[in-house]
Image (cartoon, rainbow, N blue to C red; front, top):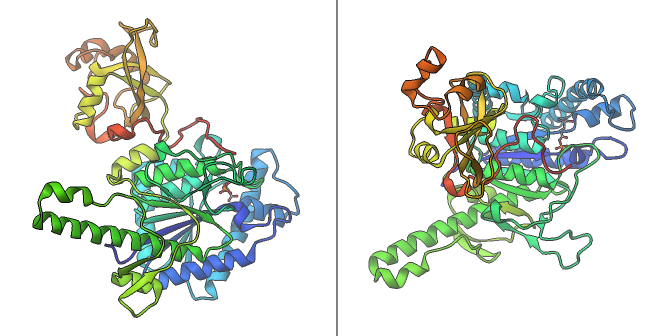
Length: 471
Ligand SMILES: N[C@@H](CCC(=O)OP(=O)(O)O)C(=O)O
């Protein structure tokens, strides 16, 4: 188990300023600072994703509400961001904690070299003991190149720094199966093992200041957990809960690991058929669990004792990380790039991609959108239709979309105009049709990221011009 955890804490605009007066919520900010410094002093690496630039700009210019015109919003973000970062810097300075400002746009990370540069800068700052404070570079980002909401930005940041935890701080303590304000019998959802099966009420529209709501938090949780990041939704007015939740979650992992090793030991000692049923599932243990603590937990609990009872955690929703995380280049292909179109591929091509081959023109059935060479596209699997539905007008056969939906993303070697002419052909035929053949592949293997089969029906990061859920 890791001694030093990397923890990303995301605060939305409504956690940073008062929704009506737009004055900073100093008590919350101070508690966040104390929590972050405590975690840092315990040996953990902390990144803060802070919204609030526009809201702070509104206060500075004495404006009552967010203007409609984009240049005005961008000007306010420029005014507010320097005040915001100065506020964070001043608060952290009281505890002698250096911070750094990182402002990102989607185009910054769409270039692989820039993505790696950003990653290197994060790592350097974290190893220097600095707390990076991240926001979207609103002044440059127009809608086409926006992350759009800081929930998504925080999940991409968490993937980039290979975080252990992402905390999405919000105005409720957790997800509920129904709206708790109108349904007194609403049940808290404490642990989510599989987001695809989540049945929660996500109708919360977010604040008047920000752009995120509960549904953008689910998108963010899906993205972050796919990169192996445990994602937590909890109340921003109680930042002290972060340490208790980390302690609790780590204790659960330790307890599960101990239970697994004792089960494995008994597998050696006993008949395999009688003990295999005792292997632990993801079912959470009861709230209070006596465990022998690993050293970093005793740091978190600040207790000298090696054996103690872990107190129950405050209410929160915890999304468990995918056991087979998508990281590095594949994470960047899936979430760093904005797709410019879609390639519809057949099941054979999908199988070949899953078996780590490149994408050949013969497997491409149809396409949508206009894109250039070396731009990113979505990959969607289609099958020959049985009911006569013609998805593709130009293709030789009729095709329809499958339930698998989007199965991955790729950077293509040919433009949409070129692929339109070579789809369905063998690679040896490319030169005859185009007059040249830059590659036998439509996309090289290293430029293709495919989702594991059982997860491919889940949407990935919303791309350019795609509608996000939630307000
Ligand atoms: N980047 C913008 C905030 C983006 C946004 O709306 O985020 P959130 O408040 O988390 O929904 C700002 O700093 O004002």
